[in-house]
Image (cartoon, rainbow over all chains, first blue to last red; front, side):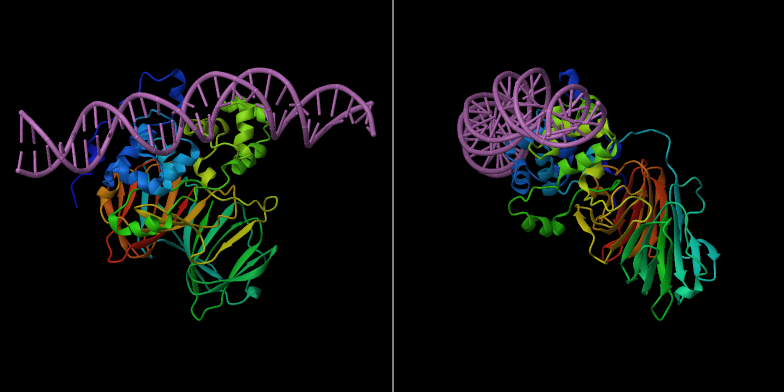
Length: 210
Length: 210
DNA sequence: AACAAAAGTTTCCAATAGGAAATTTTTGTT
DNA sequence: AACAAAAATTTCCTATTGGAAACTTTTGTT
């Protein structure tokens, strides 16, 4: 693998189009520059990019040179045609913020165990505090809804992804539904909820609460 | 949704898009509808929204009624003025009831596809809007860090769980680290980040952003 | 260096976005 | 129901976008 990606060495940050009207200041970031970078990184000519996006060569040129503000539908053609991702176009690369550079890796099985009769949780990313989300991997021991003395209920929202096996997802306001490997669910946690394994082996899920 | 990452492409994977868009079913999906929902959810009249965004009442009305395709700069004013999360505009809503008892099941592979050159996302739980978290399952196409024109960077925190294969997890402030099946990571998204498959087959991960 | 081909830019014009004000629809009150 | 006020839509017009083609610049070959 190469030693260092091109964009780390580059300086850029030039404030192109200084002549633009005061209004233009509102423009978030060099959409055009972005587009050009992306196009070039794919080794496409304007002509080819034009074919892929359905936008005229000249239009692409103008966009890249910030001579026009493309319409939403044009942006969409760009996005679809070049495989760009929206958020990328809009998110300010607020460099050097200094803040927000945390990272916590949890190796498989190295999380913090937290067993209960029905669930066997493994808390992930426990090195970090003040997280918005709480992720954990859980083995579902429960084999019957009766094993739950009452609904599990708490604040927030929860995302659930089935890693292994199958299970019944009980919720207070809906019919129980069976989930299989690869299925997922998102729900409000104030609503009672509970999982029961239906596969031979205990089912395993990823859970994220926020 | 909140934020997703992504970017460029390699000639191999071109197929999907190349043929898929012979022409242009350009409709990204009711931008107007979304805008209206968001405005109403904030109890704003067109007049008030106009003040906040700097766009004319009439223009807002036309946008909401899909009578015009706003320019990029107009969309930006919208985003800034209404405090919209850009990605919100691109994900399919479908409000259900009040709050508290929501539930959304996504069957394996039934998520909303969102391909990019380097990542192939499948957005999960897209029926629900106003979620605190945005979960998605992603196949990592990228095979080299160079495929990223620049760091992926956006707001919020992200949780990552490796479902299949192995990959290198690049971050702006840390050494790249290799992750294997079952490993997970939690990090601040303002810090540049990117994934590169190191396994024979493209790696697969679960991603949750908040 | 001269030329040809490819890539990119600019021009010109038809199509369309954006704003101000008029018009219509909705909401609330009596 | 009738009216007034508020909100939303439509109209009308100007400014800007987007496309085709002309034009310019760059690249590569002899």
